[in-house]
Image (cartoon, rainbow, N blue to C red; front, side):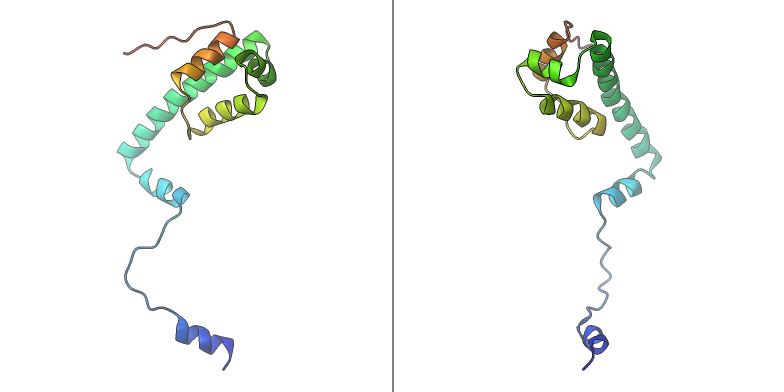
Length: 114
């Protein structure tokens, strides 16, 4: 028996079930909905605003990630992860971490509810 025959005999019939989507495919599908897209963009603006402020403050202070890490009592990779997590939106740092970061820059964190 050749391979083609075996595959034909062992192939599963279609059951009518929905195709399994990857995370990226699911996100792309959901973002086609205008309401979902608007909320996604709103949340991204908030996350990126924090990242922009952090990076601008570090640049203004003329400090590297390693220098911030030293002042915070941690290692440079932790600061890199913090900054990249904000960029990716996969993780939101705690208020305590943001306070430590701000203190390392000689700044403070303010939270405003509007």
